[in-house]
Image 1 (tube, one colour):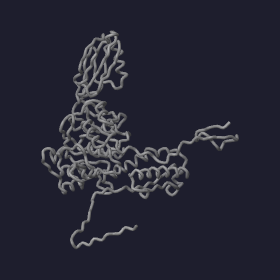
Image 2 (cartoon, rainbow, N blue to C red; image 1 turned 120 degrees about the vertical axis):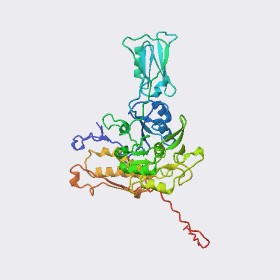
Image 3 (cartoon, one colour; image 1 turned 120 degrees about the horizontal axis):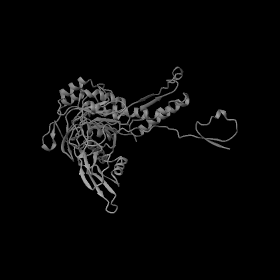
Image 4 (spheres, rainbow, N blue to C red; image 1 turned 60 degrees about the vertical axis):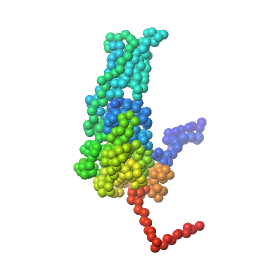
Length: 496
């Protein structure tokens, strides 16, 4: 009888019975799907939500449901998400951090203690109401409601049953603690109180611990983020730690200096910190005015504007000269509504850029709008100090890392070399088609016996050498104009 096998299950060298053998083979992978180049890992504070736990956010509705109302704080997650979305971002992994003095709101209803599921001031607006069913009088419904977080309802004939229903609801707003002597159900209402956000987290709490629990920044590990922001953290002692994390994870970390900084102090701080890495973009401490729809005019760090811009840009793109939305002023320029403006001189910009520090200002090379003025990272190497180098290098490396591991364990022979070349060349070819790379002449892959001698393959080593030429960024646009009555203009005639 003919038999069907999955590829690899049939040893064709041991067949002795004449028959039909069908082997099902999976489609050959000719290229890898590109990884996300716009996912933002954001660490900050909030009035609600889990602590040191990454939460997927794709919209302001997601953010409000997960972290509660926005707070008028430079470290607030909601404000950062709002700003970034306005620039084009739509994919976030948000981590809430606290200083440890935060507290959960509590209340008592019919002899049972209700505690907000999470700490924070948002819990103070949770109302809990217990009502009796008008028909089945032994049945009661507990409704917990919050203007931003929504409402939840649980029905039961006893507090024990209602508490069990709350436990079963992963989106519950409260936790019910029923005493040993279970009280009778009785209609009533209460509003929780005593919830507190705590103070501003320390640098150590923002950075977190890289252990089994992975707190703070380290909670972003292995989440596929391309951009990292510790929102509102301006401590220069954290910059090199951020750089190390960013290089190891393929994140472009967006850091910033303290509010109202001076150029000379910013340069001194960067030098003292020893920050010289393509893995970090350092924004000057000229904070921006933002008209928040909840908290009014706010002075906010520039990080979320830059991160949001990258969140909507292809990885070969630089932040240079891209128009930003929602900026209504800066510390240097003042509020636009005041009618006063103060701009950066070329000398001031030159001092910042030579030190590897970027800034958001108005005007930009393209006109009178707010934009990132330098498009640089903090590296002192001119060959790699552009945004596009960091983002595209991380993108290509992470894309390769996402799928090439499938070849580990295969037999080293010509077929393996050919398969590796095919996948890498197909991946780079797709990048050309999408405009990330310029053309087929901009990349090369070598994986054969020329770079894999037997002395190495016999030990289990296989090497693929990949070279990629990036497209440059137009930073210094020079137009040569020759004018005058003596100028002779020669018109070239195109060949037909």
